[in-house]
Length: 74
Image (cartoon, rainbow, N blue to C red; front, top):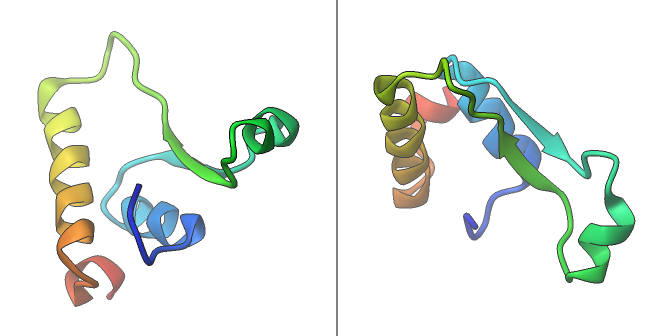
């Protein structure tokens, strides 16, 4: 969870970094609410994703967590 960010902001920032994700309820609003969750950001990883792509996702999330960067939100 990234405190202080809307899911749309995280999705947009990741998209700007070339990372495809979905943000929102993912057609599962009732179950999300059941667990006390609201919209989420969901990356979809598969066997063809490389370690470098996963590292890029993690690094971008860490950068977001560190603060609102003009590089990310430019």
